[in-house]
Image: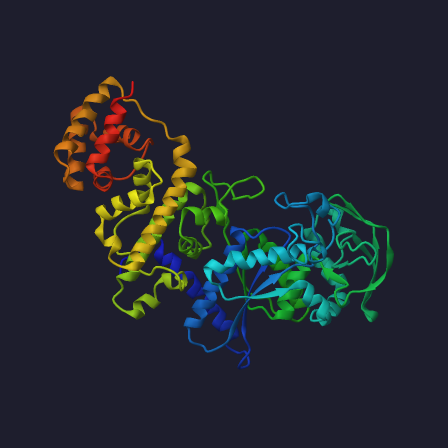
Length: 532
């Protein structure tokens, strides 16, 4: 079976993690499910990190099922809709109307989009649509329901009983100015409804209550001044997020969770807390961050990185799933210009998958984690995405039928089977999007110098006289021209890329000219020669 770049590392980690999970749960009573967990904060829109944190544990879950233990499994996506809104996101409407609710749980803030019962309800609805294309089997668990139903109550009593020790664990990790007023609990103010503005002043474990005042300022919001004593049970309070993480692990009996490497210290701290409650922290897997083209951590707040919408505009959704399968302990560059290479890596893997000698070999392929019911499972063509993109650029048109004729002329196998054709048409659409968004706006017609014109005329002559020349013959002719005009034959290529594609770099020209046809390339060169 052919091996795509990165395939061995892409394949190994879910299986390695699954074996660790199997060791952890070997002594569980029969029928106890193995719990995989991820989280989503519904104070903002789902993004690539959300996709990552749901897909990756699903890969480990799939690998665990392949071990054949027979144990049931669940993948829980925990929605922290009791979290207080810290600031109004830039990308929501009616921002002024939302601003008056800063500090309240997002489950109790009206939907600014006007279509759901709450702010968090809208975001959770978007999450479902966001995850639908990747067909992940998961269960939503809402923080507000866990608190209000009493499912957290017994654990909350334990946290209240151990509040002093928990404070000792957490306080050293806080800024000095925040240590004195920190509490594991955040009561929900019955007067103003805020949760971020409350300050605990006394604990009463014997009656499961705390005394508090609503006096903090937070994100432009201010406490209302209310003072009182209130139960921590039944949704009248939540715990701070580091304690909340331990609370979920303890009550849901979570066995496995991935998290970014920036949360390693928080995971360690939450592990201390869950042990204090006589629970066991899950197996953890800290993953590396995504990097932009300059090697900086991807940051939405400063506009770096790639959104899922952008990815699916320029590449098939399966490529994103494949990208997220690559070894998470290795930092990956993730920027728009890198996507085409990931597409071609995926196509290599897909060809290898289709060429497997048996069903068993295919089951052992990394693509078994990626392919879904609607996915093309074959790509019976050597066509690369880079070549399709350059063809679109050279043709300079959005006429799909016109482009498709060129592609099928280059490789008749594109119509040999429905799955190959389906993938090729998706690649064509993605290439068109990429061309319209990035290439066309910056494309500059090149006017060759007097010294370059003779080289170009020689190429035109050859292409006109040899319309059926093979890719290899065209490549040889280009190298001959390079040897005749430069100290190194390869120096001719930047000139041809500028003339034919309007860019500094490009594909293997022999194969590309064969794809675009010698007639079309001769026409492009003639147009360049006509410029002054």
